[in-house]
Length: 187
Image (cartoon, rainbow, N blue to C red; front, top):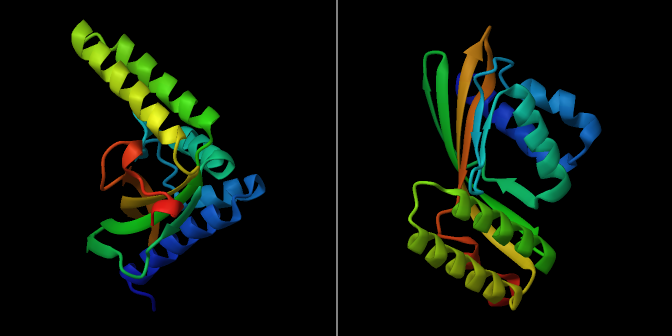
């Protein structure tokens, strides 16, 4: 009989399989990993990247498979903790992706829009942030388009009728803004 930790690793392997396949036809099968309860939450790496609910998570994964890079989860060295019907996992991952100048402009403009619309930030702070974002955008476009981004991933699972389901995921970069990611030419 499989232990809870082994069952959780099976869920993580299926998570990896989805990112390997990147097949929209596989999405409904893939989403069986997720709790069907609408309490699911995914925190991504982008500014404002908070996804709530099953249908929004489904849309996020579909967009990831279309537009995001290749993700390789380090399941073998993951730290899995189980407490009753709750479990949490910490693991590292590597993200390899290509950022074209057009995509970098899109990100910068989105960040500038979010910054300029933030009512809690002073006008001077907004201008400084917009200048910083703009300067980093220009610098980034002078480098290679290939990014190697280390990720930290936290997964919270709930046990329902002896099966484990993902309820929460949090992705983060162990380093700062997008300008900090090493490029293949720099490694």
